[in-house]
Amino acid sequence: MEKLCLNCEKKLYRYNTSGKCKLCWCKTRIFTLEDRKKISERYKGEKNPDWKGNRVGYRGIHMWIQKQLGKATRCSINSKHISIRYHWANISKKYKRNFSDWMQMCPSCNSKDRIGRRVSA
Image 1 (cartoon, rainbow, N blue to C red):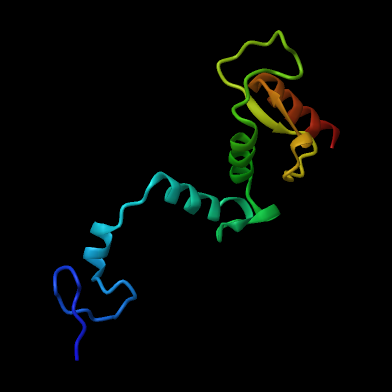
Image 2 (cartoon, rainbow, N blue to C red; image 1 turned 30 degrees about the vertical axis):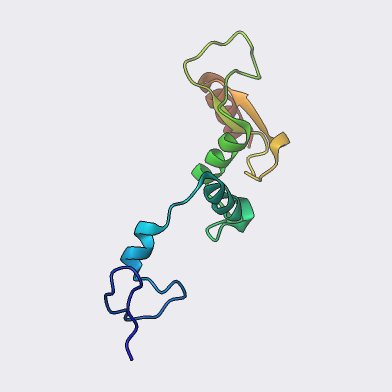
């Protein structure tokens, strides 16, 4: 005996618990705001299957810090510096997920900081 979709009565090749074919199930499923929030919470941070932890790359850690602390808005080294954009700069250059290891810098101070570290290192 073959199973039929409850909505359109097409033949179901794989029986699922809803009793509807994939096309009908997707059309009738409406995600409420509450459903979306639950799904979002389920995959945040370390719960996400793509989470890399401390094995994250340079760009990934910068995106993470910007998401956690917001966009950099000022220069921590010299408050008189005015710039169009600001950077989150890592102090220890170990790029760990530690908020105290990051500071806001203008591009000028950030490049001077990096050059100074290369010369002294």
